[in-house]
Each structure stands twice: as structure tokens, then as C-alpha cells.
Image (cartoon, rainbow, N blue to C red):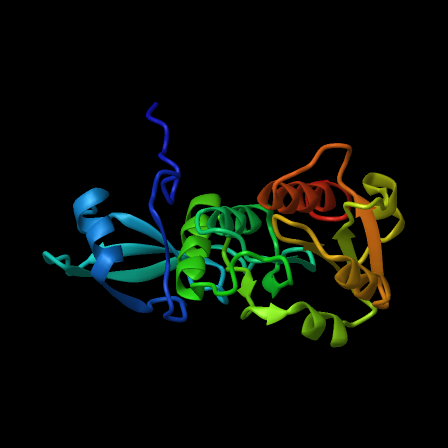
Length: 248
């Protein structure tokens, strides 16, 4: 007896779109996404493409009206409900191109709800290409199966972040001068959280004092070794997800 193939196919390409999805909704696709589907993935009429818009979950859509540079994807069935991720923010100083892109990619994969760039005194980068970071978030979400992108905040100064901080959200920060052991501290502070990671040169003394004076702030140690900023961001997020997030 021939086995019935899985539907939708697990190998179906995934695509983030801006159009709000629903039963029977036709999504026109052009530009780079169309090139990817038509020329790279060799999508043919009636092939399935998985779509998500960040609001409506994931939908299986059938390809139709395929031309050289555009096509239409028609939603036929919802395959996954809208995703709920843990209430966790990653607040990080901008670092060199490539490394900040890596942080964005891994933040999406790990289930971060919000990525907030924060300008600190020792940061060697004082501008960010938010469009490029958004593109990395989209690509990561397409690859890892997320149905919604992390919120991406505009670059803001550290004092502005701290001045408007809601004390009901724990603000863990990587303190190079010490800090409590990470695991037991995370277990003792469940609930909405954010992790603040500084730039390559770390926080200066005045910034550290300002962070420690912020209601809800908790200094933690990330171990005995000096970590790159991107390593610290990824390691801290992984630890939080394992203890207080959706890894268990």
C-alpha cells in the first residue's frame, strides 16, 4: 500500500509576506522573493509554499499565475496558529556589521520577543541599518519556523532606556565586575525579562552605576571567561530560554 505523502510537504519553502493571510487570500509576489521561488526553488503551478505574516499564523498556499518575474500564492489552509513566544527582550549595544547581524539572526531563532539596540558610551558603532537587520530577522524566521518576527526597536541611548524602564520587567545585565551566578539568579526571577549586553568594551563605571540603580535591574555573571558581545547575547538568551522560557 502506498503511503499518503505528508501535506503540506515538509520541504515546502517558507516566505514572510506583508499581506494579511486568510482562507482564499491571493498574495502577489514579485522582486527577490519571486526570483527565489521561481528560479531557485523551481516552484511550479499548484506547488505549496508556506506563508506567514506575523499576525495570522502560518498558511499553506498554492502557486498559480507563474510568470518570469512574479507569481500569485493562494492560501488554502492554515497550518499553524499564531505563535506565542516568551516575554523576553534582548537589549544590546550596536557592534560591527556582521556581528550585529548574527545577534539578530540568533535572537529570532531563539525566540526573542523584542530586539532593542542600545547606544552606550564605549560602543564603536553609533548607527544601525535597521532595514538590513529586519531582513536578517525575516530570513531567520523563514528558516527556523517562526510565524512572527521579533519586534525591532530603533536605536536608543542607554539613559533613555533606563529612564523609562518598567520595574515589573527584570533587567538582567552582564556585569564584568562581578554579578550573581546566572542559573540561580534566573530561577529566582521568573516572569517578563530583558537581558542587557554591552559593547566590545563593556559598560563604563557611570553606566554600570546607572543600570544598578534602575528598579528591576539584576547584575549577573556570564562565567570566568571574557566573551565577545555577540557570544554574551546569544549565551544569555539561551540560558534564559532554558530556565524561564519555552525550552522546557
